[in-house]
Length: 127
Image 1 (cartoon, rainbow, N blue to C red):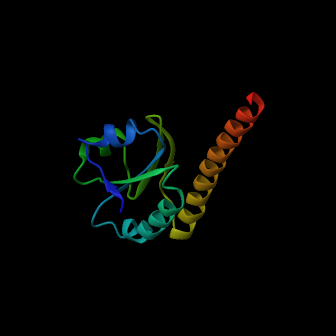
Image 2 (cartoon, one colour; image 1 turned 45 degrees about the vertical axis):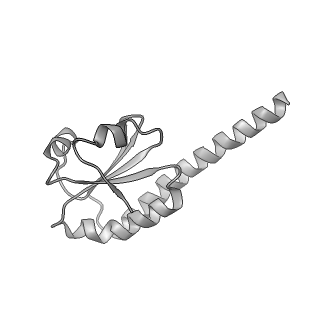
């Protein structure tokens, strides 16, 4: 299940998150938002320990919609350490989004694995 966040909970759940957060801005009337939902859930199932996934109803959270200057839906923001690292909008198909999500997943999983490898080797050297 994807966590729904609002203007009230955004800072705590997204900006203060210790891991990167993929924020999906959508609306109930947005057809493409519904089409990409299975892709987002699949993405989340593969990397939920390295990247958090949340959704925001753009119609009900005007402050966030204005803060992040949404011009179309869906819009996905990858936020790390409180900063927008990537903005995904204007993708034309679920397949295009799937490729982008795979690149993000691979990038973060590789970097997490590299940190674990570095920690392991540093521990081995000091032992």
